[in-house]
Image (cartoon, rainbow, N blue to C red; front, top):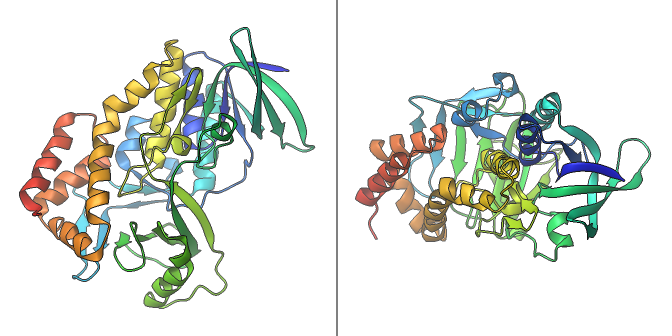
Length: 367
């Protein structure tokens, strides 16, 4: 039996950030990560404001991108320049490892292993069964005051509590020897309720497609690659799921849900890394104050309005090509561009930035 104040199931951006900030408060934690050498198949784009806000070193960035290229369903493509800030492209294996090392340096303990199930509660403590994967596999029990679920869209902690899996968008992607000077987004066609993307990096770029219809992913990716003058033969295709935010429960007593296990992915843009890290820091802050019930309050105060706005835009404008075209045409307007990019990149907590973007949208969108 091991003892710790906080058991964190999952060592990705949410779990590592939680452990790092708990350690800063002098609170001991164990971060469980089942695959310390794994790499999540995602674009790896993080807005510049996240690096400043969370004190992340520039060394974690593989490449900085200062332009976005938008490809509407029918109209001409257009570029959006970033007057300030950038998208930091990270290699997820190196990035997640770096976050865990930062947490370890602050005093958190990192263990190769995975949460299996809850055994029981005893004297206000939670006893969890975990399976370690460092060398010879073995099962052990960990007694903690809190458990933080940071174990992704297929969360075992959620399953152990009888909660349904998080509703998801399906994606399929690959690393491709393709270079571009922008993060590119392709809308319409087979990408039902989603989009296709190119995230350039220092080496292989991430190319993929997301849709609520899993059956179309491979043929749609094949067509996309053909349009780019390439094919998918020989590529390692990897699929994963992105949560569709639905205001999932973020806490059950002393069990807190963060990152993908809480569905904290921005609707429409499907940006998740920053919000996963932020959910981890909010959970740490609430635990540090001895008020776990404040964790959802922190989240709602900072992000709920933004998430509701983007979910509304997603529901209204990504349902068919005509409506998608209408919304994207709005982003040809320079004022809408500037206010939207500022809100996206800076990650300011000032409500004025959000309201100025909403007002710019209102003036341009017609129903």
